[in-house]
Length: 528
Image (tube, rainbow, N blue to C red):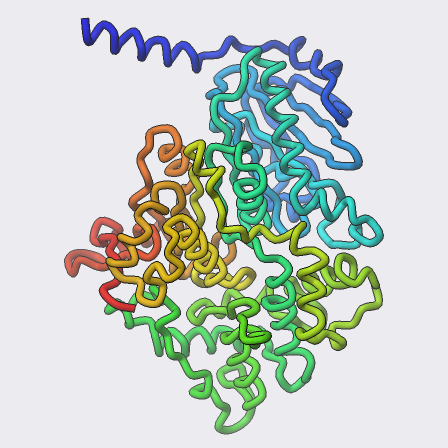
């Protein structure tokens, strides 16, 4: 009788997650659905077959515009007033009962089609929004504070509500579980949802979260511009980055006992850029005295203001990956994002010159004007945790865009909020620290990735599935104890390593290849 009852319960559970395939007519009928403040522009049935991602490959992060084979789905395009464009893709058959919404990078401005493709192929209903504007710069914000609010937090929430309404109308049943998946600004969006709208999602995957925008742009990116461009002699050409990385690795690679081209914990690295001082003529293999000064400023981060840190600096060990973020006379990512932020969002003056910036006046003004709209730094995840929400954060130690310590700082603030212990062993991340945040680890986990750049790439183990472990955590209550990551060269895997929940790190057992994850265990450091 006991086993009969168990099988009956299991059969009932399976039946609850099996949905009758929808039809083309059901899809097209969604155009007549009335949703608050929303216009459904189109609802089209797309049969199984090739699908070409709209927009340019550079916008979507796609390697090409080659058609991608997709299962049949209902593609809904809609707009929430005033201008939040979003799409929801609903599988015609094989829906797993869940929603996976995906985030945007940078200033958003486009639908994240590539991420939607992956979610749809995995059986999810998926949704994405341009957050209320088009284009990857910040010019849209000039004179439109309402659009900044949409970008800051409203668009993702509205998209989420409307997606759930469309799901119920299309399938005749509500969504079972909801997940959010984003990196960079998408990581910020995920943290914003968990903090501001804790009931929207059951699980949030937040990669390299740019969650402290009012400090990231001035203290991270603009500081890089100031450190290298205010004085022309401070400028560090990108052809010197490889020499800088080689020198930092020579100083710190073996701190963890392994010579593997990675710095396990760059905080322990005491690399002095002075070793690169040019003895003779300036060249790509050395630095001038002014360049050494600039590099030290980049590692240190912006100077504290009134005794309080502004934003962490970059970490040693992945300097060759800075190339796309280093300001150049022809401008680059750090310049474009930070200067655009101040021109169009903060000062609303297209002629604003970064040479006029000073932290003493500019930072308080920026924070007071936009902090409540753009920053997702609240450590209070109580409401999110109250419905058993799970948050998984990952961050590359060699991230050139969002300083790695930003993720650690946020995680520590959450631990302190949950445990009620402001100290929480933060100065010495040992086994005692790990035990002190055990309660926090039940709902929030951080995975630091040695050698990984911004949201991927870099010399470290940068390919891994963090979404699957999040789903397993939400649905089966199995918290991720390690995540398998790999590094490939010419599409061939040449190294695997485990990623460990912070503050644990992957430590070599002393046996077997250092390129095989099975020869590593996750341990908390014995001392800091």
